[in-house]
Image 1 (tube, helix red, strand yellow):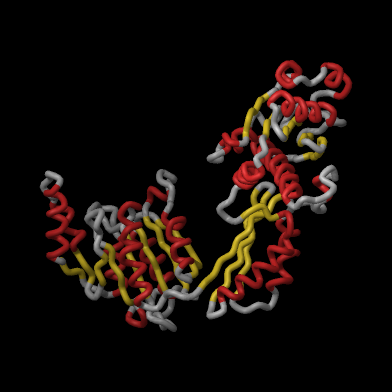
Image 2: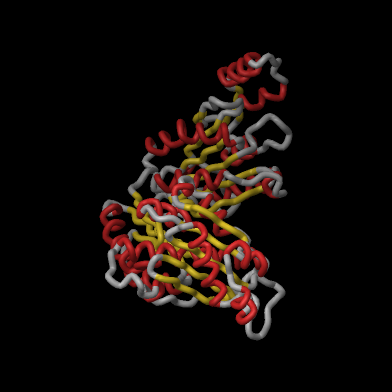
Length: 446
């Protein structure tokens, strides 16, 4: 695969004043073309820093993309630095200057003298028209002609290398990349066959997921595997390239998907709540929730999904003992005997909200989010989650020693996964629906 490095320029990016969105936009676009990004570097508006970054990049990569620094102000250095580094003289392009002046005058402004610098084009550069701004983009065939000697010698590329300069504003960068850079990459032979497959898993740690996947891809040429761990989730990414890219992706992807089994809840674009709501709608089932320690986060995640009104009837936050009794119907005797954080109480939460809402399923949650409030018998992080349905009530007890925000997220993940697995079990028409959801697969530790 051709390699690419991205250099984003701008002191404002280093100060955190602006989110650097350029790599997030360019990365999937380039990957779809079969171009691998090996490095992303951000430098300030400093000539030596830009020069060093460009010099290093064009000694390593087949394609170098630089964003920003093409404007008319004193902190825009990219054009001048690249021209000097490549030994190219700057020449005024009258057609570009005329277009810049016309753009200003069409908006009722007289162009300031400073904008003329944007019409300076290094010798031998290909001009990339800017249909949404004044600074054109530039592309250079660098190959063996570059003067990038500061790291020990000229570039001796295996293929003709390309250096691309794009303006910083996204409304200018994006159409320029789509309309002018992509066709150029195709024309220059940078585009290669690549296939990607991705799965999102829940409830199993990254090391365990890798143990299941690695033997499948071991020794396979033109195959890469990657993982991204989040709280209670692990994403698995398979990438293949070369003439057999699609065949390899299909064959290995099927084996990986089978090996991962029920811990897979969707593809890379799915959230767990998306999957659960879709399945509830498909099965024409309804849900209500009664939350204590998660403070309504479960209901919030469900209602973030478009169409959830078809299936979600009611969600209550019953934080105090009085609220648990008055809103959901938890018995005072149960609270007195077992405490708010207990299996009997969470059962009554799930069953009570299901009965009061008239829903097919009810979820109850009670726990100790911390960092205070724990006891030796009930430590911080203890949580009980109950799922009530037509076939009875399932309860899961867990201890998540996490910060408060992550605790709430992981607890709602677990609740959603309980419901996902039960819905999947129903869809498979298993004869023993009353069996525990958690017997479907062994829960492995993180």
